[in-house]
Length: 398
Ligand SMILES: Cc1cc2nc3c(=O)[nH]c(=O)nc-3n(C[C@H](O)[C@H](O)[C@H](O)COP(=O)(O)OP(=O)(O)OC[C@H]3O[C@@H](n4cnc5c(N)ncnc54)[C@H](O)[C@@H]3O)c2cc1C
Image 1 (cartoon, rainbow, N blue to C red):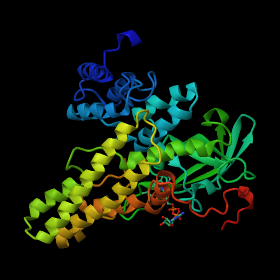
Image 2: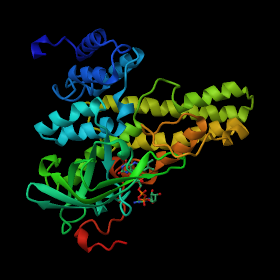
Image 3: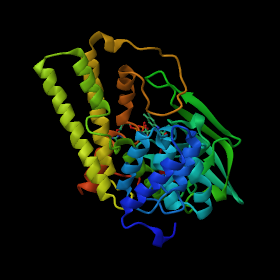
């Protein structure tokens, strides 16, 4: 659409595009991929992305209008089908990718034809992910990768992985990294299930043995992998903790429902419920404010506030729910190993309680979130970092 054709306000533009999308592609009669493809073409995938890449170049706060109207019409949700791709892969590609990469990756990512995973954590590098040891060595127009990643959510379904590997061990840890998009079906990539406390294997360990990655699938410059990773990590925190659900919905809505169903009159429990409800509402309002401040859609360290608050509250709310359930809270369907089709899903309160334990670990632990908030938001003195300026190869590791 030419610039002259744009309506007076961005809000009108988004609503006009939505009207056309919902009229031309009735969500109830259109298959999910076709609908999501049309949503992408209309610039309604990530409205703050530039035109031509699934966006309209408008404020990210208008995405809420899109999501709410499509959900109300019974349309599909890309995020639930491809959470790591839609929440973290796409913003990284649009920020750091070449024109060719943006054209290749973004649309099938949004339609969930191609699922994405994040290959950052390793057995010896989690919170301190910049110390990772997976090696990529250049060989002509390709890179040869060897190493092991762990806790890789949805790797078993993925077509592409966001891989950070060490390309220069003689540089200090943050400077010798390079970021790649790796084909998860390439020869030498092995995905093995890891079972969680829920019984499901939503994540995996991934082994790389002489995997060849074309240089054209490198994202950003050689040695610039840490800067590219920060885009993924900042978006991860917002993606995990920054969702803006309707008032009183989500986990706290579950707690209210079960409170009503149990008909308990205990004033101490009611007091606890009200405190949790007030905290959930404060988090929700804080997220609305943060999303409105994010004029260009690039989250900063303040995304750690949402992630920390979400993780800690979620655990407490589900603990409260299980307390209300009494002995029923100990009943669990089955521990049979399942390979789920999506991440963070739960079909019972018992499973939600167990799954919530991971919230304060995944996407950065609560302790690490507090460090980030202390240092980068409040400006407090930094953590002790003895290895920051040493060449990575000179740092002792187990
Ligand atoms: C459900 C789930 C899904 C995940 N999915 C993915 C994924 O898809 N891709 C991926 O790459 N990773 C994934 N992870 C990994 C996750 O990012 C790491 O588990 C996390 O960063 C912590 O690293 P670690 O497990 O190695 O713990 P460690 O870093 O070894 O930490 C151990 C303990 O020490 C504390 N600690 C560490 N450093 C500090 C410090 N400087 N100050 C204070 N305390 C500190 C931590 O808070 C923690 O309590 C997932 C994890 C979970 C639980």
